[in-house]
Amino acid sequence: MIVKKTFESTDEPLSDLLRSIRDKRLQLPDFQRGWVWDDVRIRSLLASVSLSYPIGAVMLLQTGGDSVRFQARTVEGVSSTPAVEPEEFILDGQQRLTSLYQALFRKEPVDTTDPRGRRIKRLYYLDCAKALEPNADREEAIVGIPEDRKVKNFRREVQRDYSTRSLECAAEMLPLTSLFDETERNDWQQEYLKQAGQDGILTRLNRWNELYETVIRRFQEYTVPVILLRKDTPKEAVCQVFEKVNTGGVPLNVFELLTATYAAENPPLRLRDDWVERGRRLRCHPVLRGVGNTDFLQAIALAVTWTATTRAVEGGTAAESAPGIGCKRKDILNLKLSDYRQWSERITIGFEKAGKLLHGLKMFATRDIPYTTQLVPLAATMALLDGKADNDGVRSKLTRWLWCGVFGELYGGATETRFARDVPELVNWVRGGPDPSAVTEAFFSPGRLRTLRTRNSAAYKGMQALLLQGGAKDFRTGVPIDEQAYFDEQVDIHHIFPQRWCQAMGITASRWDSIVNKAPLSATTNRIIGSNAPSTYLERIQRNAEIGDAGMDEILRSQAIDPTPLRSNDFEVFFLSREADLLTRIEAAMGKPVFRENVEEGEEPPVSYDEEDAVV
Image (cartoon, rainbow, N blue to C red):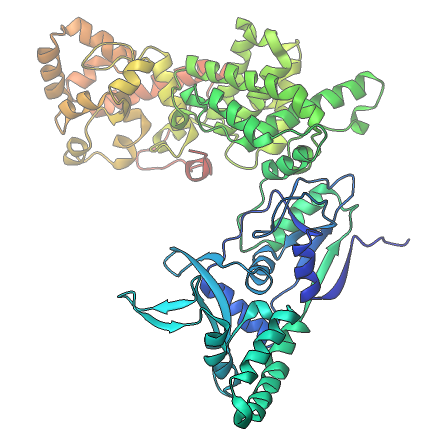
C-alpha cells in the first residue's frame, strides 16, 4: 500500500519568502497570535542570518483545501488593502519571518519593545567596521537606532547622527533594508566610494567587496528549511501540528481555530463577537461567570453529535456503527457553521437553565460550584430536552445526577469521555430509561467527611450547598442564608468549635479542621465567635441579638448542629452527632444509602485525587 504524504520539505531562499509576504501570497491564519518580538531578539536573529547560522524550520500550509478554509490576515507591517487571497499560511515561524520582513524589506521603522517592555521604534543597520573585525561579536554589528536616525544621551543630546545617506556612509552604517533592494544598495555604495576620494577609493572598494562576500551575500543567499502541509491536511491535524510546533507561544485554542474558519464562510460569522454577546448574557448569572468559550463549544458538540447519532440509529444504523457522541477537539473542529447557527441559541438557553438550577441549589457564584465541568453536559442536556427541562420531575433527576457526581467525586479528572456518556444517559433517563452510570457508580465513604477541609474538594463545596439548601441560618441574624445575605454578609465556611479552643483542648486537627466542624456563617458572626468556647460565644450572640434559647436551638438545628453538646462544649458528642446528620443529608441528595463504617481515632481515610485536583 502506498502511503500518501501529507507534507513536503524544501529549502527556500529567504528573499523569496519575504517577497511572498510583501506580495500577500504568504499570510497568517486568523487564529495566529500577534507579532511580539523585542529589539534584542530581532538583532540576534539578524546576526544569525548574517553568519549563515540556522534559525529553524518554517511550517507553511497550502490554502484552497475544503477542510482548511481559514480567515486570513496579512503579516504585521503589510497593508491589508487591497485584499489578496493567500497561496499559503504561516503555521510556525511567524515571529521570525515577521521580524526579518520588518527589518529587511519594510522601509518603515520597526515598532517593537526594549528589554523593559517599553514601546520603541527602530531602524536596523549593519555597522560595517564591526562586521569586518575578525574577532568581533556579530550581534554588536547589528544596530537598532531610533526612527529619526539620531542616537541621543539621557540629556537628549545627539551623540551620533545617521539622518542622511552621507552621514550613514561616513559612519559606515549600512541600512539593512538595502540588502535586498539593489537600487538602494548601489546608491549607498556609490556615495560610500565617492567619499573616499581618488586616493582612498581602492581601499574603500576592497573593504566593500569584503563586506559583500562575508555579510551581504550571506543574507541574499540564505535559505530556510520549509515544511509545507498540503491543502488536504485535516483541520484537526493542523490544530495538533500547530500546538506541537508552536512551543514558544500560547497553545492554540479550538475557539480561535473555529473563529478563523467561520470568518471564511459565505456568509461569514464573527464568532468572537457572537461569543462576547452570549458571554455577556451568561455573566448576568454570577454562577455562570466561569463558563468559557471552549465550554460553550463542547456543549454544542455534544448536542450536534447526539442528534446525528440518534438519527442514524433511528434510521436503521447499528449503534456500534453510528457516528458517536463526543466533545473532544476533533468533534468541536468538525462543527459546521450551520451546526453553530442551529444550536448556539439553544445551548445559551441551556446554560441559563443550568445556572438557575444551581442557583436553586444555593450555589450563588462560580467558586461555589463543586465541578464547573458538570455545567457542560448539564447545559447540553437542558438544550436537548428543551421545554421538558423545566418540569419538576426532570429537574429532580438532573439534581440527583449532579449530587451523585459531586459526592461520588467523578468529575475531577479527564471528563470528555464521561460527558459523552452523560448526555445520552440523562436524556434516556428522563424518557423512562435506567439510571445513568454517574448515579449508579457514585459512592461516598463516610470517612471522607473527615478529610474534607478546603475548597479544593468538590464534596466540600457540595456540603456547604446542601446546608444552605436545607435552610441553614446564620447564628446571629437567624435568617436563612439566601443570595442577598450570602454576598451582603460575606458568608463563608467557618469553624463551629474555634481552632484555638480546639488546639488548647488537645483535639486533633483531623477532627476540628474537617467539614464536620464547619458551617456557613457571616463574617460578623465569625468575628463574634473568635477563639471562644461555644458556650461563651452563644451566650454573647443571644444577648446581643436578643435570641431566646428555643430560637437559638432552632438556628443551630438548621445547620445540622445538636444544641446540647455545643452548649456544654462537648466536642466529641457534637462531632459524632453532626457527622451522622451530614451523612443523612448526603444520602438524601444522592438518593442512595451511604454504607456506614467506623473510622478509628487517629486513622485517616485515604484522600481521593479530587482533594488535590478538583476544579476550583
